[in-house]
Image (cartoon, rainbow, N blue to C red; front, side):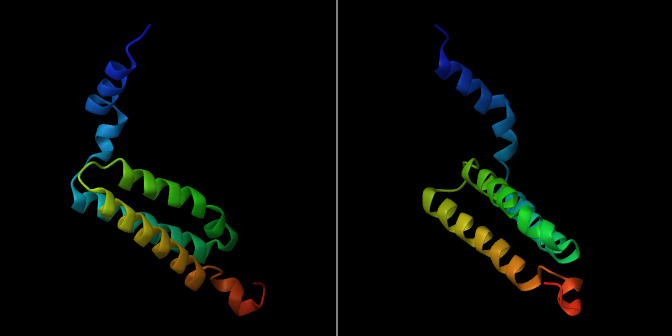
Amino acid sequence: MPNYNRISASILEGGVLKILNMKPIYSISILILISFFSVVIGHLFPPNGILISPIVMIGQTVIIVFNSRYNVVQKALLCYLFIGTNDIGIKLFAGGYTIRWGWG
């Protein structure tokens, strides 16, 4: 039988998840950029902003949850903050030019 603890430890030490364990300033910057581009896409390409929202939320949550520099409360608050930011941005700015024309 394979030793799964050893396999998962090797993934955490040198694999994909090591990339996610970055300094908090870098992870927050990436999360802000993801939210910003999501809102811009929602504004310029109206239905696509709402369609990519689940992907954006999953991506932001993965970045926050797998970053071991935060404790549990900070992870929960950051997830709440960035999912809320994406939702509010889409509600305020999605639709873009189609709102002026009366299409949406």
